[in-house]
Amino acid sequence: MTPRRSRLTAVVARCWPRTLRGRLSLVALTTAALVMVILTVVFNAIVRQHLRQQADDELRTRAAAVAATVDTRHDPVRVLETGDDALLDANVWVYAGARVLEHPASAPAHGTVSRAAAHLAARAGARCATLESAAPIRLCAEPAGHTRAGAPPATVVTAMDLGPYRASASTLLVASLALDGTVLACTYVLTRLAVRRALRPVRTMTDQATQWGAVASGQRFGGAGRPVELARLGASLDELLDRIRAVLRHEQQLTRELSHELRNPLARITAELDWWRARPRTTADTRTTHAAIADAADSMRTICDTLLDEARATAHTAPGTTDVMGVLRRLTDRLRMPGKVPVTVTGPKTLTVGVPAALLERMVGPLADNALRYAHARVTIRASQEPGGVRVAVVDDGPGVPADFAPQLFQPGRRADPEDGHGGAGLGLPLARRLARSAGGEVGHDAEHTPGARFVVDLPGG
Image 1 (cartoon, rainbow, N blue to C red):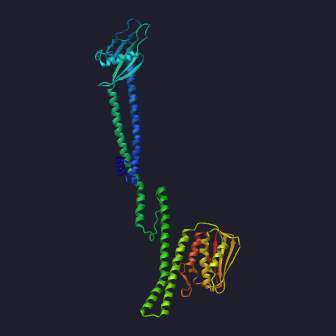
Image 2 (tube, one colour):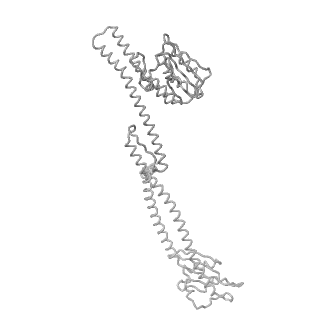
Image 3 (cartoon, rainbow, N blue to C red):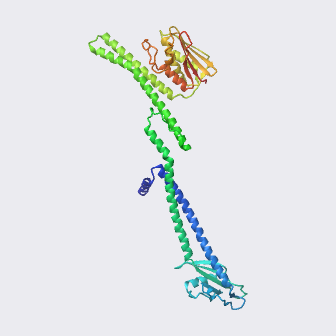
Protein backbone atom coordinates (compact mmCIF):
# COMPACT_ATOMS: atom_id res chain seq x y z
CA MET A 1 0.00 0.00 0.00
CA THR A 2 1.41 3.39 -1.01
CA PRO A 3 1.92 6.14 1.60
CA ARG A 4 -0.69 8.30 -0.12
CA ARG A 5 -3.24 5.52 -0.02
CA SER A 6 -2.37 4.81 3.61
CA ARG A 7 -2.96 8.45 4.54
CA LEU A 8 -6.28 8.41 2.67
CA THR A 9 -7.35 5.25 4.51
CA ALA A 10 -6.37 6.80 7.85
CA VAL A 11 -8.40 9.95 7.08
CA VAL A 12 -11.44 7.88 6.09
CA ALA A 13 -11.09 5.80 9.27
CA ARG A 14 -10.97 8.94 11.44
CA CYS A 15 -13.97 10.49 9.68
CA TRP A 16 -16.06 7.30 9.71
CA PRO A 17 -18.63 7.45 12.53
CA ARG A 18 -18.00 5.11 15.47
CA THR A 19 -21.59 4.92 16.68
CA LEU A 20 -24.43 3.01 15.07
CA ARG A 21 -26.54 6.16 15.09
CA GLY A 22 -23.85 8.08 13.21
CA ARG A 23 -23.37 5.31 10.66
CA LEU A 24 -27.07 4.92 9.96
CA SER A 25 -27.41 8.69 9.66
CA LEU A 26 -24.48 8.81 7.23
CA VAL A 27 -25.98 6.00 5.13
CA ALA A 28 -29.36 7.75 5.03
CA LEU A 29 -27.70 11.07 4.17
CA THR A 30 -25.63 9.52 1.37
CA THR A 31 -28.65 7.74 -0.10
CA ALA A 32 -30.77 10.89 0.03
CA ALA A 33 -27.92 12.92 -1.53
CA LEU A 34 -27.63 10.49 -4.48
CA VAL A 35 -31.40 10.57 -5.03
CA MET A 36 -31.54 14.36 -4.80
CA VAL A 37 -28.62 14.79 -7.23
CA ILE A 38 -30.28 12.53 -9.79
CA LEU A 39 -33.64 14.27 -9.41
CA THR A 40 -32.03 17.72 -9.61
CA VAL A 41 -30.08 16.89 -12.78
CA VAL A 42 -33.13 15.35 -14.47
CA PHE A 43 -35.44 18.18 -13.39
CA ASN A 44 -33.11 20.94 -14.58
CA ALA A 45 -32.45 19.17 -17.87
CA ILE A 46 -36.20 18.94 -18.48
CA VAL A 47 -36.68 22.61 -17.53
CA ARG A 48 -33.93 23.77 -19.89
CA GLN A 49 -35.33 21.64 -22.70
CA HIS A 50 -38.81 23.04 -22.07
CA LEU A 51 -37.59 26.65 -22.05
CA ARG A 52 -35.67 26.18 -25.30
CA GLN A 53 -38.71 24.54 -26.90
CA GLN A 54 -40.82 27.47 -25.74
CA ALA A 55 -38.34 29.94 -27.30
CA ASP A 56 -38.33 27.98 -30.58
CA ASP A 57 -42.13 27.98 -30.70
CA GLU A 58 -42.22 31.74 -30.25
CA LEU A 59 -39.58 32.24 -32.96
CA ARG A 60 -41.45 30.01 -35.44
CA THR A 61 -44.69 31.85 -34.72
CA ARG A 62 -43.05 35.19 -35.51
CA ALA A 63 -41.39 33.71 -38.63
CA ALA A 64 -44.74 32.42 -39.91
CA ALA A 65 -46.30 35.87 -39.38
CA VAL A 66 -43.48 37.52 -41.34
CA ALA A 67 -43.58 34.85 -44.08
CA ALA A 68 -47.18 35.87 -44.81
CA THR A 69 -45.89 39.28 -45.94
CA VAL A 70 -43.36 37.87 -48.42
CA ASP A 71 -44.57 37.80 -52.08
CA THR A 72 -42.93 34.91 -53.90
CA ARG A 73 -45.39 34.87 -56.83
CA HIS A 74 -43.55 37.55 -58.79
CA ASP A 75 -39.96 38.02 -59.73
CA PRO A 76 -38.16 39.44 -57.95
CA VAL A 77 -39.35 38.29 -54.51
CA ARG A 78 -40.38 41.21 -52.39
CA VAL A 79 -41.75 42.01 -48.96
CA LEU A 80 -45.17 43.55 -48.93
CA GLU A 81 -45.75 46.63 -46.92
CA THR A 82 -48.07 46.10 -43.94
CA GLY A 83 -49.60 48.26 -41.33
CA ASP A 84 -47.30 46.81 -38.64
CA ASP A 85 -43.77 47.20 -40.00
CA ALA A 86 -42.43 47.11 -36.45
CA LEU A 87 -42.57 43.33 -36.78
CA LEU A 88 -39.70 43.47 -39.34
CA ASP A 89 -37.56 45.44 -36.94
CA ALA A 90 -37.89 42.85 -34.18
CA ASN A 91 -34.82 40.75 -35.07
CA VAL A 92 -36.18 39.39 -38.36
CA TRP A 93 -34.24 38.72 -41.59
CA VAL A 94 -35.83 37.97 -44.96
CA TYR A 95 -33.70 36.29 -47.64
CA ALA A 96 -34.30 35.51 -51.29
CA GLY A 97 -31.62 32.93 -51.82
CA ALA A 98 -28.45 34.61 -50.57
CA ARG A 99 -29.83 38.12 -51.07
CA VAL A 100 -31.05 39.98 -48.01
CA LEU A 101 -34.41 41.56 -48.58
CA GLU A 102 -34.91 42.90 -45.07
CA HIS A 103 -32.85 42.94 -41.87
CA PRO A 104 -33.29 44.56 -38.43
CA ALA A 105 -32.12 48.11 -38.17
CA SER A 106 -30.32 47.18 -34.94
CA ALA A 107 -28.27 44.42 -36.60
CA PRO A 108 -25.57 45.47 -39.14
CA ALA A 109 -25.60 43.56 -42.39
CA HIS A 110 -22.09 42.18 -41.79
CA GLY A 111 -22.41 41.76 -38.03
CA THR A 112 -22.02 38.45 -36.15
CA VAL A 113 -25.74 37.90 -35.75
CA SER A 114 -26.44 38.74 -39.42
CA ARG A 115 -23.76 36.31 -40.60
CA ALA A 116 -25.26 33.56 -38.38
CA ALA A 117 -28.72 34.32 -39.84
CA ALA A 118 -27.36 34.19 -43.44
CA HIS A 119 -25.62 30.88 -42.74
CA LEU A 120 -28.82 29.41 -41.28
CA ALA A 121 -30.89 30.65 -44.29
CA ALA A 122 -28.42 29.15 -46.77
CA ARG A 123 -28.94 25.64 -45.34
CA ALA A 124 -32.62 25.66 -46.50
CA GLY A 125 -35.50 24.21 -44.57
CA ALA A 126 -36.80 24.86 -41.06
CA ARG A 127 -33.85 24.91 -38.67
CA CYS A 128 -32.84 26.45 -35.35
CA ALA A 129 -29.42 27.23 -33.92
CA THR A 130 -27.91 28.99 -30.90
CA LEU A 131 -25.27 31.69 -31.20
CA GLU A 132 -23.06 31.78 -28.12
CA SER A 133 -21.81 35.34 -27.94
CA ALA A 134 -21.76 37.95 -25.19
CA ALA A 135 -25.48 37.26 -24.88
CA PRO A 136 -26.80 33.89 -26.09
CA ILE A 137 -29.10 34.27 -29.11
CA ARG A 138 -31.47 31.69 -30.54
CA LEU A 139 -32.18 31.84 -34.33
CA CYS A 140 -34.82 29.90 -36.28
CA ALA A 141 -35.28 29.79 -40.10
CA GLU A 142 -38.62 29.12 -41.83
CA PRO A 143 -39.32 28.87 -45.62
CA ALA A 144 -41.65 31.62 -46.94
CA GLY A 145 -44.34 31.16 -49.62
CA HIS A 146 -44.10 28.88 -52.68
CA THR A 147 -40.95 29.24 -54.73
CA ARG A 148 -41.34 29.14 -58.53
CA ALA A 149 -39.03 27.10 -60.70
CA GLY A 150 -35.77 28.91 -61.27
CA ALA A 151 -36.49 31.51 -58.57
CA PRO A 152 -34.33 31.61 -55.43
CA PRO A 153 -36.04 30.32 -52.25
CA ALA A 154 -37.36 32.82 -49.72
CA THR A 155 -36.47 32.29 -46.05
CA VAL A 156 -37.43 34.16 -42.90
CA VAL A 157 -34.96 34.08 -39.97
CA THR A 158 -36.02 35.26 -36.52
CA ALA A 159 -33.78 35.77 -33.47
CA MET A 160 -34.34 36.02 -29.75
CA ASP A 161 -32.17 36.72 -26.71
CA LEU A 162 -31.96 33.56 -24.53
CA GLY A 163 -30.73 35.49 -21.51
CA PRO A 164 -34.10 35.64 -19.69
CA TYR A 165 -34.72 31.95 -20.32
CA ARG A 166 -31.31 30.95 -19.05
CA ALA A 167 -31.71 33.25 -16.09
CA SER A 168 -34.95 31.47 -15.26
CA ALA A 169 -33.19 28.10 -15.61
CA SER A 170 -30.34 29.26 -13.36
CA THR A 171 -32.83 30.55 -10.78
CA LEU A 172 -34.57 27.17 -10.80
CA LEU A 173 -31.19 25.41 -10.41
CA VAL A 174 -30.25 27.53 -7.40
CA ALA A 175 -33.69 27.01 -5.90
CA SER A 176 -33.48 23.23 -6.41
CA LEU A 177 -29.98 23.14 -4.86
CA ALA A 178 -31.27 25.10 -1.87
CA LEU A 179 -34.18 22.70 -1.60
CA ASP A 180 -31.75 19.77 -1.82
CA GLY A 181 -29.65 21.19 1.00
CA THR A 182 -32.73 21.74 3.15
CA VAL A 183 -34.03 18.21 2.48
CA LEU A 184 -30.61 16.66 3.23
CA ALA A 185 -30.29 18.61 6.48
CA CYS A 186 -33.79 17.57 7.55
CA THR A 187 -33.07 13.97 6.52
CA TYR A 188 -29.91 13.87 8.62
CA VAL A 189 -31.54 15.42 11.68
CA LEU A 190 -34.68 13.29 11.46
CA THR A 191 -32.66 10.12 10.88
CA ARG A 192 -30.51 10.78 13.94
CA LEU A 193 -33.58 11.49 16.03
CA ALA A 194 -35.39 8.41 14.74
CA VAL A 195 -32.37 6.14 15.26
CA ARG A 196 -31.79 7.60 18.71
CA ARG A 197 -35.39 6.90 19.64
CA ALA A 198 -35.23 3.41 18.15
CA LEU A 199 -32.00 2.59 20.05
CA ARG A 200 -33.25 3.99 23.35
CA PRO A 201 -34.52 0.55 24.47
CA VAL A 202 -31.11 -0.93 23.62
CA ARG A 203 -29.40 1.67 25.81
CA THR A 204 -31.88 0.90 28.58
CA MET A 205 -31.17 -2.82 28.24
CA THR A 206 -27.43 -2.12 28.36
CA ASP A 207 -27.80 -0.09 31.56
CA GLN A 208 -29.95 -2.84 33.06
CA ALA A 209 -27.40 -5.52 32.19
CA THR A 210 -24.67 -3.40 33.83
CA GLN A 211 -26.63 -2.91 37.04
CA TRP A 212 -28.05 -6.40 37.47
CA GLY A 213 -26.14 -9.07 39.33
CA ALA A 214 -25.43 -12.23 37.38
CA VAL A 215 -26.90 -14.58 39.99
CA ALA A 216 -28.69 -12.62 42.71
CA SER A 217 -31.00 -10.63 40.41
CA GLY A 218 -34.09 -12.34 39.04
CA GLN A 219 -34.96 -9.48 36.68
CA ARG A 220 -35.52 -10.04 32.97
CA PHE A 221 -35.35 -7.87 29.87
CA GLY A 222 -38.70 -9.09 28.54
CA GLY A 223 -40.31 -7.78 25.35
CA ALA A 224 -43.50 -6.03 26.41
CA GLY A 225 -44.01 -2.71 24.63
CA ARG A 226 -40.93 -3.11 22.43
CA PRO A 227 -40.58 -3.65 18.68
CA VAL A 228 -40.52 -7.23 17.45
CA GLU A 229 -36.76 -7.21 16.82
CA LEU A 230 -35.94 -5.88 20.29
CA ALA A 231 -38.47 -8.23 21.87
CA ARG A 232 -36.67 -11.16 20.26
CA LEU A 233 -33.33 -9.75 21.40
CA GLY A 234 -34.68 -9.40 24.94
CA ALA A 235 -35.92 -13.01 24.91
CA SER A 236 -32.54 -14.24 23.66
CA LEU A 237 -30.72 -12.24 26.35
CA ASP A 238 -33.07 -13.64 29.00
CA GLU A 239 -32.25 -17.17 27.86
CA LEU A 240 -28.55 -16.31 27.92
CA LEU A 241 -28.90 -14.92 31.46
CA ASP A 242 -30.66 -18.08 32.55
CA ARG A 243 -27.84 -20.20 31.16
CA ILE A 244 -25.21 -18.00 32.80
CA ARG A 245 -27.02 -18.18 36.12
CA ALA A 246 -27.31 -21.95 35.79
CA VAL A 247 -23.58 -22.26 35.07
CA LEU A 248 -22.67 -20.00 37.97
CA ARG A 249 -24.98 -21.89 40.31
CA HIS A 250 -23.38 -25.14 39.16
CA GLU A 251 -19.91 -23.74 39.79
CA GLN A 252 -20.96 -22.55 43.22
CA GLN A 253 -22.39 -25.98 43.96
CA LEU A 254 -19.13 -27.64 42.87
CA THR A 255 -17.17 -25.19 45.00
CA ARG A 256 -19.31 -25.98 48.02
CA GLU A 257 -18.94 -29.70 47.36
CA LEU A 258 -15.18 -29.43 47.06
CA SER A 259 -14.81 -27.28 50.16
CA HIS A 260 -17.05 -29.62 52.13
CA GLU A 261 -15.48 -32.88 50.93
CA LEU A 262 -11.87 -31.72 51.02
CA ARG A 263 -12.15 -30.21 54.48
CA ASN A 264 -12.06 -33.59 56.26
CA PRO A 265 -9.05 -35.06 54.39
CA LEU A 266 -7.12 -31.82 54.89
CA ALA A 267 -8.00 -31.81 58.57
CA ARG A 268 -6.75 -35.38 58.86
CA ILE A 269 -3.47 -34.50 57.14
CA THR A 270 -2.99 -31.46 59.39
CA ALA A 271 -3.79 -33.45 62.54
CA GLU A 272 -1.42 -36.26 61.62
CA LEU A 273 1.41 -33.83 60.92
CA ASP A 274 0.78 -31.92 64.17
CA TRP A 275 0.68 -35.18 66.12
CA TRP A 276 3.86 -36.44 64.44
CA ARG A 277 5.79 -33.21 65.15
CA ALA A 278 4.58 -32.88 68.75
CA ARG A 279 7.27 -35.24 70.09
CA PRO A 280 9.72 -37.86 68.80
CA ARG A 281 8.04 -40.86 67.20
CA THR A 282 9.08 -44.39 66.56
CA THR A 283 9.48 -45.86 63.12
CA ALA A 284 6.12 -47.60 63.44
CA ASP A 285 4.43 -44.33 64.41
CA THR A 286 5.99 -42.61 61.39
CA ARG A 287 4.73 -45.38 59.08
CA THR A 288 1.26 -45.03 60.54
CA THR A 289 1.32 -41.28 60.00
CA HIS A 290 2.51 -41.72 56.42
CA ALA A 291 -0.22 -44.23 55.74
CA ALA A 292 -2.89 -41.92 57.16
CA ILE A 293 -1.62 -38.97 55.09
CA ALA A 294 -1.49 -41.13 51.96
CA ASP A 295 -5.04 -42.35 52.57
CA ALA A 296 -6.29 -38.77 53.02
CA ALA A 297 -4.47 -37.67 49.85
CA ASP A 298 -5.96 -40.60 47.95
CA SER A 299 -9.41 -39.60 49.18
CA MET A 300 -8.83 -36.03 47.95
CA ARG A 301 -7.71 -37.33 44.57
CA THR A 302 -10.84 -39.49 44.31
CA ILE A 303 -13.04 -36.49 45.06
CA CYS A 304 -11.30 -34.31 42.46
CA ASP A 305 -11.36 -37.09 39.84
CA THR A 306 -15.06 -37.63 40.40
CA LEU A 307 -15.88 -33.96 39.93
CA LEU A 308 -13.65 -33.64 36.87
CA ASP A 309 -15.15 -36.76 35.35
CA GLU A 310 -18.58 -35.27 35.91
CA ALA A 311 -17.60 -32.04 34.13
CA ARG A 312 -16.11 -33.93 31.19
CA ALA A 313 -19.10 -36.23 30.90
CA THR A 314 -21.51 -33.28 31.03
CA ALA A 315 -19.62 -31.56 28.20
CA HIS A 316 -19.54 -34.69 26.00
CA THR A 317 -22.99 -36.19 25.99
CA ALA A 318 -23.23 -36.84 22.26
CA PRO A 319 -25.75 -39.55 21.29
CA GLY A 320 -24.51 -42.95 20.24
CA THR A 321 -25.35 -46.67 20.17
CA THR A 322 -23.79 -49.03 22.71
CA ASP A 323 -23.88 -52.76 23.41
CA VAL A 324 -25.20 -52.81 26.98
CA MET A 325 -23.98 -56.25 28.00
CA GLY A 326 -20.46 -55.58 26.73
CA VAL A 327 -20.18 -52.41 28.83
CA LEU A 328 -21.61 -54.13 31.93
CA ARG A 329 -19.21 -57.07 31.62
CA ARG A 330 -16.21 -54.76 31.30
CA LEU A 331 -17.44 -52.87 34.34
CA THR A 332 -17.85 -56.00 36.45
CA ASP A 333 -14.43 -57.28 35.35
CA ARG A 334 -12.95 -54.08 36.74
CA LEU A 335 -14.91 -54.37 39.97
CA ARG A 336 -14.05 -58.01 40.65
CA MET A 337 -11.26 -58.20 43.22
CA PRO A 338 -10.25 -60.97 45.64
CA GLY A 339 -12.13 -60.75 48.90
CA LYS A 340 -14.93 -58.58 47.49
CA VAL A 341 -18.60 -59.47 47.04
CA PRO A 342 -19.19 -61.14 43.65
CA VAL A 343 -21.04 -59.21 40.95
CA THR A 344 -23.45 -60.98 38.59
CA VAL A 345 -24.63 -59.56 35.25
CA THR A 346 -27.80 -60.79 33.54
CA GLY A 347 -29.71 -59.69 30.46
CA PRO A 348 -30.30 -60.27 26.72
CA LYS A 349 -27.19 -60.60 24.58
CA THR A 350 -28.48 -58.25 21.88
CA LEU A 351 -29.41 -55.15 23.81
CA THR A 352 -28.40 -51.67 22.68
CA VAL A 353 -28.81 -48.27 24.29
CA GLY A 354 -28.75 -44.83 22.72
CA VAL A 355 -25.79 -43.40 24.67
CA PRO A 356 -21.99 -43.73 24.30
CA ALA A 357 -20.28 -46.60 26.11
CA ALA A 358 -18.21 -44.32 28.36
CA LEU A 359 -21.34 -42.46 29.43
CA LEU A 360 -23.19 -45.68 30.26
CA GLU A 361 -20.25 -46.87 32.35
CA ARG A 362 -20.13 -43.56 34.24
CA MET A 363 -23.84 -43.92 35.06
CA VAL A 364 -23.78 -47.51 36.26
CA GLY A 365 -20.32 -47.37 37.87
CA PRO A 366 -21.25 -45.26 40.93
CA LEU A 367 -24.31 -47.44 41.54
CA ALA A 368 -22.20 -50.61 41.40
CA ASP A 369 -19.55 -49.06 43.69
CA ASN A 370 -22.21 -48.19 46.27
CA ALA A 371 -23.71 -51.67 46.03
CA LEU A 372 -20.29 -53.28 46.64
CA ARG A 373 -19.72 -51.07 49.70
CA TYR A 374 -22.88 -52.14 51.46
CA ALA A 375 -23.69 -55.64 50.07
CA HIS A 376 -23.41 -58.64 52.37
CA ALA A 377 -23.16 -61.54 49.92
CA ARG A 378 -24.10 -60.56 46.37
CA VAL A 379 -24.60 -57.75 43.84
CA THR A 380 -26.70 -58.26 40.73
CA ILE A 381 -26.85 -56.04 37.63
CA ARG A 382 -29.87 -56.80 35.46
CA ALA A 383 -30.39 -55.31 31.98
CA SER A 384 -33.78 -55.55 30.27
CA GLN A 385 -35.67 -54.20 27.29
CA GLU A 386 -38.55 -51.96 28.29
CA PRO A 387 -41.28 -50.29 26.14
CA GLY A 388 -39.65 -46.89 26.55
CA GLY A 389 -36.04 -48.01 26.10
CA VAL A 390 -33.55 -49.95 28.22
CA ARG A 391 -33.46 -50.46 31.99
CA VAL A 392 -30.41 -51.39 34.05
CA ALA A 393 -31.09 -52.35 37.68
CA VAL A 394 -28.34 -52.62 40.32
CA VAL A 395 -29.44 -54.72 43.30
CA ASP A 396 -27.60 -55.57 46.53
CA ASP A 397 -28.50 -57.40 49.71
CA GLY A 398 -27.14 -54.81 52.11
CA PRO A 399 -28.97 -52.78 54.76
CA GLY A 400 -30.74 -50.62 52.19
CA VAL A 401 -31.38 -46.88 52.24
CA PRO A 402 -32.83 -45.45 55.48
CA ALA A 403 -36.35 -44.15 54.91
CA ASP A 404 -35.59 -40.76 56.45
CA PHE A 405 -32.55 -40.33 54.18
CA ALA A 406 -34.30 -41.27 50.91
CA PRO A 407 -35.33 -37.64 50.04
CA GLN A 408 -31.67 -36.57 50.29
CA LEU A 409 -30.26 -39.55 48.42
CA PHE A 410 -29.39 -37.67 45.22
CA GLN A 411 -28.19 -34.42 46.81
CA PRO A 412 -24.45 -33.81 46.27
CA GLY A 413 -22.25 -34.39 49.30
CA ARG A 414 -24.93 -36.13 51.40
CA ARG A 415 -24.34 -39.52 53.04
CA ALA A 416 -26.67 -41.46 55.31
CA ASP A 417 -23.92 -42.21 57.83
CA PRO A 418 -20.57 -40.47 57.21
CA GLU A 419 -19.03 -42.46 60.08
CA ASP A 420 -19.98 -45.89 58.74
CA GLY A 421 -16.40 -46.66 57.78
CA HIS A 422 -17.06 -46.78 54.03
CA GLY A 423 -15.22 -44.40 51.71
CA GLY A 424 -17.03 -42.03 49.42
CA ALA A 425 -17.66 -38.35 48.92
CA GLY A 426 -21.42 -38.48 48.42
CA LEU A 427 -21.11 -37.47 44.78
CA GLY A 428 -21.60 -40.72 42.86
CA LEU A 429 -25.40 -40.91 42.88
CA PRO A 430 -25.93 -37.22 41.93
CA LEU A 431 -23.36 -37.66 39.17
CA ALA A 432 -25.13 -40.72 37.78
CA ARG A 433 -28.50 -38.94 37.79
CA ARG A 434 -27.13 -35.80 36.07
CA LEU A 435 -25.46 -37.88 33.37
CA ALA A 436 -28.60 -39.93 32.77
CA ARG A 437 -30.80 -36.86 32.50
CA SER A 438 -28.35 -35.23 30.08
CA ALA A 439 -28.83 -38.27 27.82
CA GLY A 440 -32.63 -38.24 28.08
CA GLY A 441 -32.82 -40.88 30.81
CA GLU A 442 -33.26 -41.10 34.58
CA VAL A 443 -31.73 -42.71 37.66
CA GLY A 444 -34.02 -43.61 40.54
CA HIS A 445 -34.24 -45.58 43.77
CA ASP A 446 -36.81 -48.33 44.26
CA ALA A 447 -37.98 -47.61 47.82
CA GLU A 448 -40.26 -50.69 47.86
CA HIS A 449 -37.47 -53.19 47.26
CA THR A 450 -36.47 -55.23 50.33
CA PRO A 451 -34.16 -56.46 51.60
CA GLY A 452 -31.22 -54.39 50.41
CA ALA A 453 -31.27 -51.59 47.87
CA ARG A 454 -32.29 -51.39 44.21
CA PHE A 455 -31.28 -48.55 41.90
CA VAL A 456 -32.69 -48.29 38.36
CA VAL A 457 -31.19 -46.59 35.29
CA ASP A 458 -33.69 -45.90 32.48
CA LEU A 459 -32.19 -44.87 29.13
CA PRO A 460 -33.45 -44.44 25.53
CA GLY A 461 -33.01 -47.46 23.25
CA GLY A 462 -30.34 -47.60 20.57
